[in-house]
Image 1 (cartoon, rainbow, N blue to C red):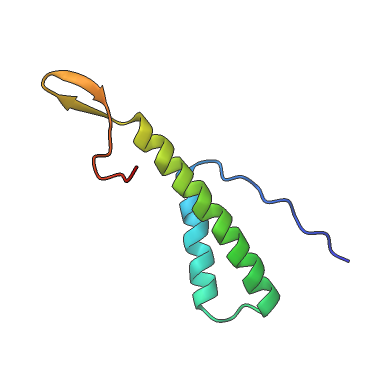
Image 2: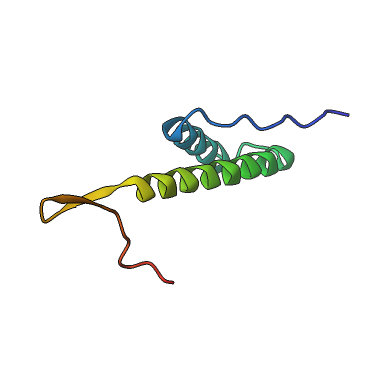
Length: 80
């Protein structure tokens, strides 16, 4: 029985996005067997979650220059 590999955390957003794009291209090719497609899908979901979290973290750090002073970013379109 083959033991599943522990997913390796991406080193950064750009490498996660590149891996995700490669997974999508491979899945779209239609050449993966069913088990490999499921594994690729799971990894893609992990990478997507990682990318979303990284974007959220950056969004929280963005400052907007307003009336000569830096203010923390606030999303005026966010639902409470």
